Amino acid sequence: MTDSTRVPWRTVVAYGAPATGAGYMYLILSLYVMKFATDVLLIAPAIMGVIYSLSRIWDAISDPLVGYLSDKTTSKLGRRRTWILASSVPIAIGFYMVFAPPLSLTGDALAIWMGVAIIGFYSAMTIFFVPHLSLGAELSTDYHERSRLFGARHAAYIFGSILSLVSLQFLITREIEGGDVRSLAGQLALLAVLVMFGLVIYASVKLRERPEFQGRAASSPLKAFRDVWQNRHARLLIVVTFIEHVGSAAIAALTLYVTQYVVGKPAWAAVIIFAYMLPSSASVPLWLPLSRRFGKIRVWMGGMLLTGTSFGAMFLLPFMESETMRLVWIIAMAFFAGLANGCGGTIGPSVQGDVIDFDEYQTGERKEGAYFAAWNFVYKGATGLMLLMTGFALQWSGFEPNVEQTMEVKLTMVTLYGLFPLVCYAIGAYLFSKFELDEAAYAKIRASLDARSSDTQNDVLAGAP
Image 1 (spheres, rainbow, N blue to C red):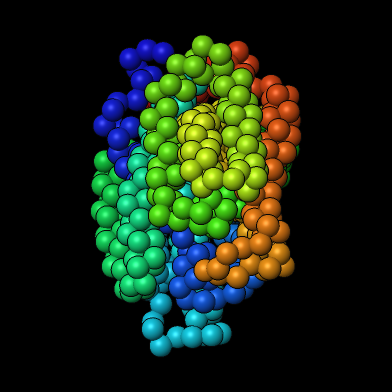
Image 2 (cartoon, helix red, strand yellow):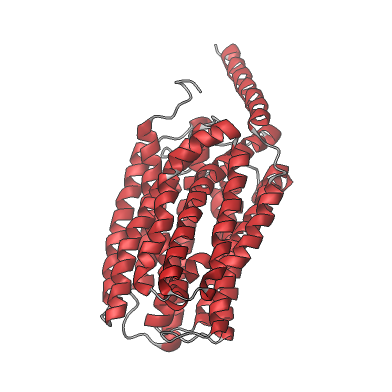
């Protein structure tokens, strides 16, 4: 790496900044909205499972559409920042709707409101996430600088997630005390959307895009996504991503349930999640040098195995006799799972950026949007499938809100929370061991692409008057 390839810190900070607001919103929605809906709004868990499933079906259209259109966009602001800026208003509306439903709504009307709000929020987040991830892959073509950019994004995302734990603690405390949870949720949502709007504006003003990447998208969306699937490196990552997220999707939704109904310490939920979030963010500087020394592929594969083992160990929770033992165990396992999450958040998108350069090597096109849309869709599809199954599994096992649960319900929870993720991450790590685009292979691709760029520039200069 030379001074010319190193990304300035001001760019790193500006790129990561809006991820703080996104991390806050995503975590509070992932962790609390199911419980908010079932225990506060009194919506059946199966209905919430259907809502999440419908939102993922809609993503089958919205994710590829946003990815392709952002690749094709040409404007003075840039093909990515245009979409990032446009996402700010619908994100604000959708997020506020989720946590501030009118008090007059009940029954089917309330369920419809939540369905519109959740689907609207995730659709708006697609407009943000796909171009934002794509921009990260464009800001640097250096094999390890990408990890630095995405590491900063991950750290900011987790910082926002940690901030959301403060809100979560307020909400849980208000719920335990029997206070007005809905009013507090609406106030916190309003504050969050204002902060997110400001961070998006800041990033849109400070960042710059590569003008030479504009006008190099695929000729049609079908061609773009056919190229994604025909890229053997991307195809393997798609399969691994799906398997991983099928395993992990229920974790966020069930954390509060496990804390309350299995561990028996609902007031400690924020502490448990913090034990996961802190090492996830703080470990970013650890994974960067490790990936330089041992390679991004080996390090990420190790992170997958650590994730699966950490959550798999939580299957033992119902069999521990004392609440104190269960609490200590889940905090310890959350810490190790958080370390592994820092690895995936830092190294994963960086590897995906390398795969996109391989596509340029094959096709001569730059279609980051199509690639990140494909991975985002697979992630959301796996999440929607598992949340649908989780909602029905809870209901079929005999779950009743705010009462002591049977052992059958507890085993259902920890199976989805621990044992199933262990199996999925083990399979994902095995498949990823076959990934071939390492640093040496990437260096050859990068050299060829740089040579092409140099030849093109020489041809332009030779033809100049």
